[in-house]
Image 1: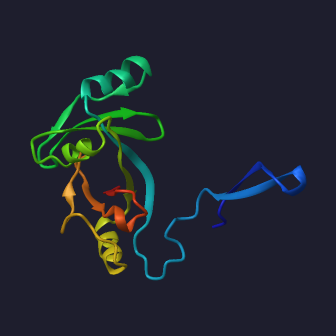
Image 2: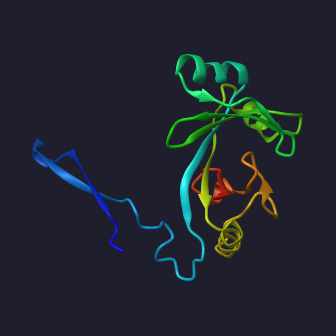
Image 3: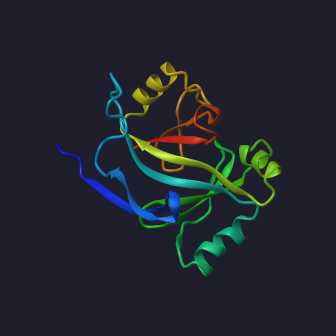
Length: 174
């Protein structure tokens, strides 16, 4: 199957103040794990971007009342120590996170980031068990020994940000 390719032209500054278009090729159909020998799992779509918020009601009102987005009800997830609200964006979602309980990982994040901010990204995988085995073999640390059930009722696993270029990555079973 031939990959469909989208060529995006953009202008860049060149030597001697002349401009010429440069092309960037973006694959729209090639699996991200293609070319990794022995890989039996694949990355899927971006499921959501999670944002830690110090005031859940204020953040929910911003997305619902000011920006006009459809938002879910606030749902407690005691096993993760958070309240969540999902903001529907069409092509993905935002997950608003607020601490639930004193041992909430979001409480610690908000102590360091008083105004809140991006907490993690969530990417779907077609086989979370195979992904975890493979990633651990490649020395990517996970934040728990086993997957847990996430906000969508599916198994999730968090990857250590120090092994993912400073980004906390959540993998979710598609």
